[in-house]
Length: 243
Image (tube, rainbow, N blue to C red):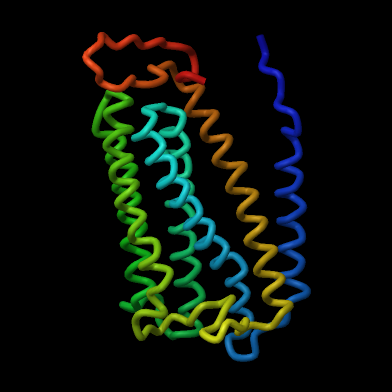
């Protein structure tokens, strides 16, 4: 029987489309050009939202990993996997755009800057997280191992975020709030940046939801592993992994 669409199922794609359109107009037509960096600065309206939403994706991996370790429910593991895949893609995008931005501004594609190095380490750690998932055939063994990595991996996120504060770095300081709490950028630029963050966030939620649905439909697996209490485990296998 065809599945009945969830109420409001078209609302999220519509909201993401509208937010993306507004962000595009603000970034390209409304926000002023940076007086020093010129047109290259407009990469900020994609570069920064990609990085921030990658943080959000990795925070989701952390929460879902902890939830799986507590509940042993593969629904949380699927969410963690989808969020990690998105976070890896966004981090790679942020690094690539940062290189394109850095070439005309810094004069180099790459430099051993604290922000660049820690972000690259972050990318490699979560690529390793995805690799760990493929090292076991049993879904619960893979989920348990990857959940442990997902919890530890998040420790690098605050290191990346505060690297421009903790160390002397070529990368620019915080974009939204300066050390005194005031925004260091033009208010119109700030609005364009905020619109980009909203658009990226809505698109990220849409992507993760669809990826989770795809993982759920990929096969049937035990819904959960009951706590070891000496009793014989009873596992009910249902299509979609215990939905």
